[in-house]
Length: 320
Image 1 (cartoon, rainbow, N blue to C red):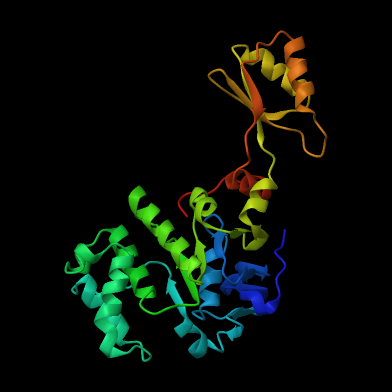
Image 2: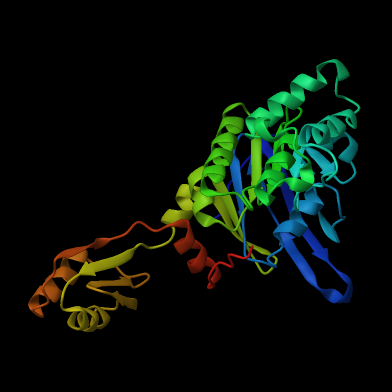
């Protein structure tokens, strides 16, 4: 499923984007990606699927072997000097000065920006620290920060100036559940202010909660992209039956084409047969005819994880 969008509405648009490394290794293969303006766009894929390579090409850190990438309407990496000041990025973890405090790190980052007004530097830094919940730790040396605090500080650096586009590579890496909720809330707030957010993550639940659109990568190729709600609905929900007669229920459901059957305690679940119109009422009636005592019967809504597995034929590598 490809999300149609006019070029003027796309904050990121790639065409046949390909990266081949020495020895013929194909990291990204013919990627056609469209990120609509104003979206929170989740970039999904297991380890080695080409996500980080794609992000590095979009940011002009490496050149593609072939194809093109446009960011904010301009060709990358050629237009990097014009584009990158309008983009905030946190890629492969922040590069911090461990001997400096969190506040001093941000002051140094801000001073390196030729467009930053030095008269308002302290206020910008204070606001960025507040937005990521680091005001209380601003005076602590960065080397004493936890991984999650370093992620927050890197995000604060990306937010020192208003950005049209924010590119985040695993932004909640190392954060506790409360920190993850805070970053999700911040991403939503940024999107409501008009910033397009492009984030990669291995946390499917996180993508489902915060993103409006998503793309799925597998083995260097784009599998699908589109609104998150549509991607999830493209996967069939699982049938679930609660019964004390689990063995008989499995037998009957299998006879009626239900596959991938699993039993947990008194609960049987399975995938409805693809491409066939199966009436749930008929399945229920078949169970009752076989003297299966049905205590609950229905389908669970498919999740983004269900869609990912259906699209790629593999589980998700939570090592990212």
